[in-house]
Structures are given as structure tokens and as C-alpha cells.
Image (cartoon, rainbow, N blue to C red; front, side, top):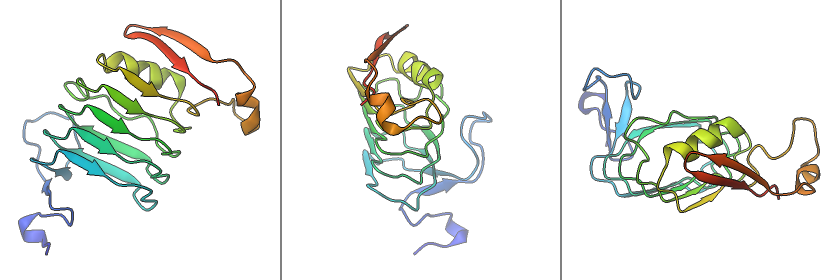
Length: 168
């Protein structure tokens, strides 16, 4: 079981209750998984925030966690990220040293991630080989969902290359 005295979480990780390095990167009380290589929470509607430090995590899959609003994570080895369908997710910090080896990402239907954040994300994750961002900030506020589908595919230049958005 879990008890306040040993600072263990129900997930099997430990909580970092003090700031280890004096830096402001992650909030206090961060969930730490020192050995975890994959974490998947599919359609966990009750999860509204995830704050974690997982130095060995290779894959983070949170598809259809539509209640997830906040993600604060130090993931220096992450190669696969699936946030598809996290419609409430707001822009998150792109921490120095985190997400650098990321090669595959899905931000599909993350409607609260604005275009400027998507450009920063692609510029930060220089090793991306595949990224899905359709349905993210596709329709202007007040328009019907079908209105975005009638437009042509958008293309934006970034430091990392060309960013393609499929509005369907």
C-alpha cells in the first residue's frame, strides 16, 4: 500500500517532495518513475494533470484522455508520444533536455493547442519523423466543425522543416 511516510504513489513511482537540483523545471511533488520505459493510459477521463519525471521512458501514450489539461514532464529519452484525442490539453512546457529524441508524435484532435505552440513543439523536437496534428486548432472559434474540413491542407515552415496540418 501507499502511505504518506514513505512518499510512495499508487502507481508504484515515488513522489519528489523536494527540489533535487534547485531548478524550477518541474513542480514539487512530481511523480518519479526511475525505471519505467512505457506508460499508457487510454481514455482515462478522470486524469486532468500528469506531472512526472521518467528518465528512461521511451513511450508515453495517453490517447483519448479528454480530461487531461496539464502535462508537465521531464522525458529525456522519449521516442514516441501519443496525446491524440486529449481535447482539453493546454500548451505545456518544452523543458530543456526533454523530448529531444522524440521521433513519432500524435497531437491529433488536441483542439486547445494553438498553432504557435505546435510550431514551438516541432522546432523543439528536431528528430521527428512522423507527427499527426490534424484537428488541433483547425477551426476558427465559432465555426462549425465541418467548416475546417473544407479548407486546403496548411503548410508552415519551421526551423525543423515543414509542418503539415490536415484540417480533416
